[in-house]
Length: 246
Length: 246
Image (tube, rainbow over all chains, first blue to last red; front, side):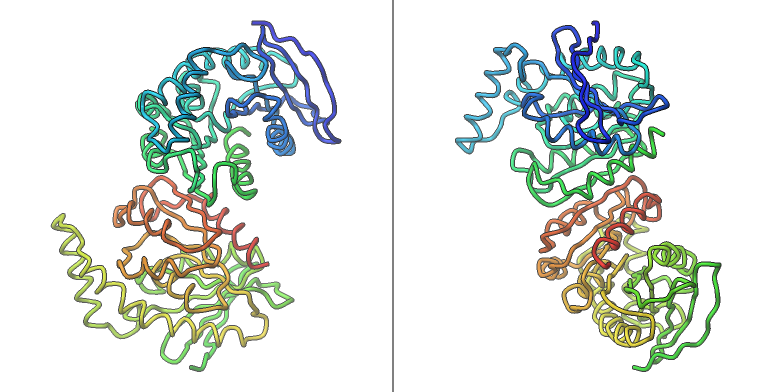
């Protein structure tokens, strides 16, 4: 798929933001405004709420990464933002909302329907984005993956040899099938967990951390709910990437 | 109890080491060699292996803390090093060794006998050390506690209002009674856990973390056994104390 740069603006003195399309998929590329040498790239994972909704949080993460000398990029997930809705995904989201509202357990069937098709479609798209981004001047390897959807991070970490380190946010439902894939992850991992994440099963997150095959992995649990990740946690992730991508 | 400084030497260009006795209890005080203003103090907790055995590891932690502008101190635990052996403690240690060697479960009785009398005797000693150290020129509050024995850290955090933050190493057995005390801890906590600690129950460590009453607490789990804490984990602890003691 061809990457087409569609706009460019300075977000502030230190950050350049470019929008692009990759085929029909919109995306963002952020780089330090004063970049000279080619730099490593961090792919910013994000929940399927649409890039427009996520923009303030993504830009804040991009700004921090740019200060450390990293380019960052994100593309729209299948069925999110301005991309065509996907009937099966919409159904799974409706099932999830219904179960949570009723205080019922979120079944494996709902989680599988919510995550597996999304990840299956997203992985080749993120790999295509990687092909295109790494061919731009000023963008170089190595590559990191940072954030959620954690199942997307897991499959990319297994499938994509250019990704050499991942900072994963254990903040989303994980299909049982992904535990087997987690055992095949071997790159260094830095896993964030919000201890009281309202939409996430803590024990499942701990089991997933245990399952990862990586020799170098660490888990960082902080108090609070899904969106309450403290600033110091971001600092530690930043140092993790500085150690592994530089 | 009176603190008597007994020796003083430069460990290197940046670190001054003084030995002292507090009554009959030997101790170490480390300060940056080039200190000017009074500085915060971090009490260095350590396993009951004797200060002499622990000296290289304690001095390394002291050097790091001194670079951040902290004084550090440690005193010998009851029944360790050159202090008189305590029959009940020796018995508990023999029972522990026997159980572990036989691959038998370490019972609550063994853990209680191992930890509770030790902590009961050590806490007033560490408080007396705090009284004496804070009256020295160049040593000031606030005070932090860093390391193991975690039960000693828990009780000090509850009993001693001058301790305002604790970096705890979840690497030792914790009596069930300490879980109730953990609920009464309210100061900011930074808890380290070695995921494959050979002498420690991971689930108990996670349960203990959950029990702490502190609003601000975080858990940092790294791969490896008891002595395998990676360097980056020490960096994160250092930043925790810089945030809370400065």
